[in-house]
Length: 75
Image (cartoon, rainbow, N blue to C red; front, side, top):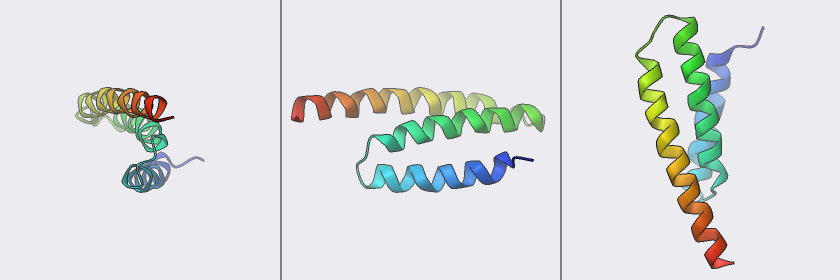
């Protein structure tokens, strides 16, 4: 069985490393991780995870678009 908590842990570490290295892919990984955290919140009835991670998804999408725009201009 797939352990979403372990997957989320790996994605959190990966996204943090990627964003720290200024790779826009880190924001994509962070967005996927936030979706997984919402699923964990629903499955465990810890509904407080959902609004926090929907906010994180929105921040990640805004940052991803911003970083991609800067990368396109720099090229």
